[in-house]
Image 1 (cartoon, one colour):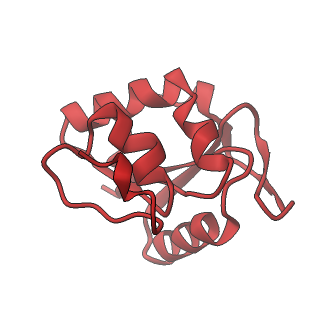
Image 2 (tube, one colour):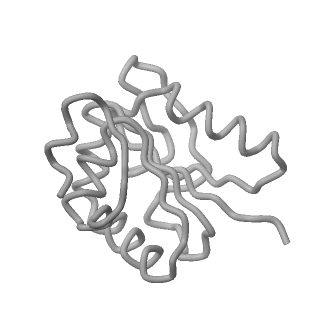
Length: 131
């Protein structure tokens, strides 16, 4: 059975931090679902629109892993979503993989306590949000 990975995009995401994992995972024959926070067309930090597979609100909690690209204000927009927070907490409770890039570890995961007791990396200067 193929692994299922969810990549969540919010307006202001860093394009290379989203497209590169999508490309590498799909080349590895992994099922990737791109979910948009607030719709199916999400615009990156450099004004590049990306058509997502689904709206995040339509996602079920079936994924083996999740990837959260960084970028500003993309990471802040991710952090503001209660639906995403609920999915992250559910996945963490089930010991699923939650990957975050650049600003997202500090902006999205650290305030939720997901990184407590773990080593993590983030965009330079944002590590002050880690416990």
